[in-house]
Image 1 (cartoon, rainbow, N blue to C red):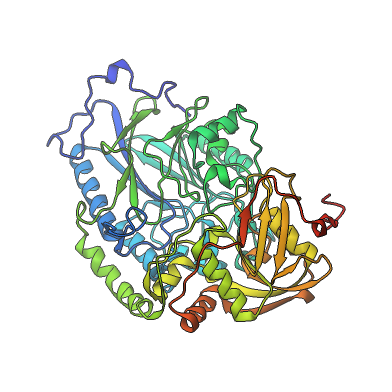
Image 2 (tube, rainbow, N blue to C red; image 1 turned 30 degrees about the horizontal axis):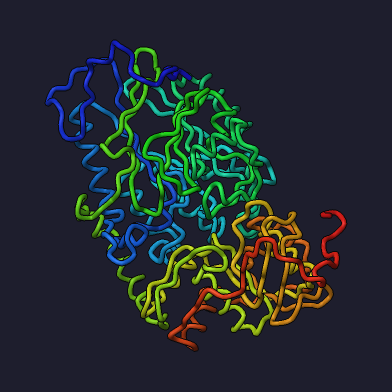
Length: 576
């Protein structure tokens, strides 16, 4: 590792002007500095077709150009870099296809065809790339025309790396050797269904990185690049406070209030990882969907970490500056005045015609199926906290109605979009529920029901979307005793009663901090073979226009007295 300590250009380079993308000399002069244009994507999730940027303005969303605009930008960077004697490295760090109709309906083929066409240099698989099974993930990576790098993905039977990825990659630009270590988040083991990752294991990150970092250095690498499907915290200041010990906040798998959102944070995030594992010059991360307009630079090890928001909204672009004589990473420059994230606005980056033609057949086929209207909502439905999450209320109410259940629950991270008012199409429902989770019916006693609710009230957990219940709680009470009133199907909670509960198979696998659900006997679980999306479609067909509202299903009342019937013990002794 040869990163310059200050990560700024030394005096000898102060007079050297980097060739901007706006243009450059026809006959570039070699000043001894390698300018490497680092282009990256993370968490594309199948967003390769043009689409409105509703996350920016739900009423008047600006159009995004998708892969065709990304291709235009990438081609222009390559053209101008070549003219200026500079280099380009294009990488993706996982979760590339699952999450949109065009990605999921083609089982990722459409996205891989685009990746091949634009010419990625390397990729790293993500946890969602196994959503359609190991066989499909392997198929996609084998059809790739560029290498996929992942050092901690192994065959569980032998402990050997799988033969459809490679642990490391050595790249060379103008005499500078860059050693790449690829890593997938080990939480894939708990976030994926067992049948989807059968025969695979995911090794711990720090030890694996250290092992292959040293091998690459022994092989002559000047710079170590960590390409990783693990991400930076939502709030960098709070993340650093936690890491440096300046806050009392404890790291748990349910610290979603700090980090923001859809992911469980067991183990290290990227900020923690590069702080505890020295010898990494720069890293590109994903998984957390947290965009950084400037890299996070570790104050001790000086590792530069990059990440974009994902979902095809942007291409990351930074210019790395390397002293060719010593192989030292000197620093970085932004590619744009706004920083490293290039938002793919269609009217700013006109779509590439070749890429448009490549995507069009896939896009048209999926659009036809997704445009079918299945119902209506009386108003737009947004996602807020558990009680005010109107999308969540709709989903959990649909689960209760379909199966005539007592209780239903849905993790908020599984709801991926808001719903517009008026006509609701199959595509709108797919946007909310893209992962194809199936529902299961569970015979659950009152103790387990309360444990689910109390678990999602513990610490700073963000809560959970519920149906069929009225939960009143006081967040100031001790963990696992925060519920002060609980009605199920209109009746007071009974610890001994067996309730009919509907939940996704994803949660029954122990995800979202609900690991104890794996203890429910198999004889109490009945697969329905109905997906959450199918359940919601049926509800809309029956009751449109639907009018979900904020009600009393999830209410905080600080200082409220606890109902006497809730004083009964409900937790196993091992938890108390």
